[in-house]
Length: 155
Length: 155
Image (cartoon, rainbow over all chains, first blue to last red; front, side, top):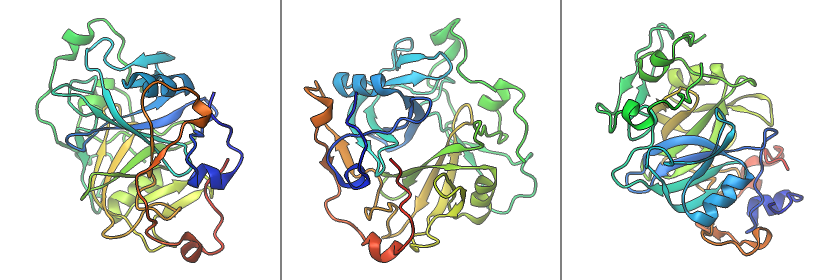
């Protein structure tokens, strides 16, 4: 679907889009809030979801737990309006800058999925290291929004 | 090395660090510039490099091309001072907020690896879609800095 990768200089310094999908057909995606700069989530796309995201300007991912394309916000209503898409030097990861208004991105109920901070410095015991919550209030109640949808988090 | 993942509620809502490393033993890492908010790079860590990063407050990754732990800046001098580490809801991705001063992060010579932007909207032809360069000047000459080091970009 995309231009063939046959030249490293072209991949790194060229103007053509030649994304690299890994063996499972996916490319990792970083999604940040264009207003606050916060990272909202880390996800994956296959070739179809990247094309769909470019064309519709709404974020489409590949759900590894549900094994299908996933239009973010389809159930929750929290659609991500894509304002910019960037790709990295070797074209094997994507950065989406999105507008979610006053919405939310995390299925647990927080605005960002990255709501916990790991303490830095000498570690006494990795198993009892306590993280700090950086969001102290959920933006929505996932039970009300997702009802009987299965939880995407896996052990 | 880390606390065992045996309870989804604990993984999502708990204060303990229970990172999930995929089958290859790696967890994806997003690195952003704490001053500008820009994403600098997307990388991977194994358990040892995550521990080392927490303890030393300098970013350590796993190099998939060189198959070894990699202290960012070891060759180039562009060390990443880690100011904060966050983990996401299901604890399978990491966000590093780093200070690189007036340095650089990308082996091609740019400050950020994400120096190209993909145009949005209806696509006529994916193979001739032209990206826009968002950094117009390299911060350093990679040939001088990396000399005979092999290029980590693979086709």
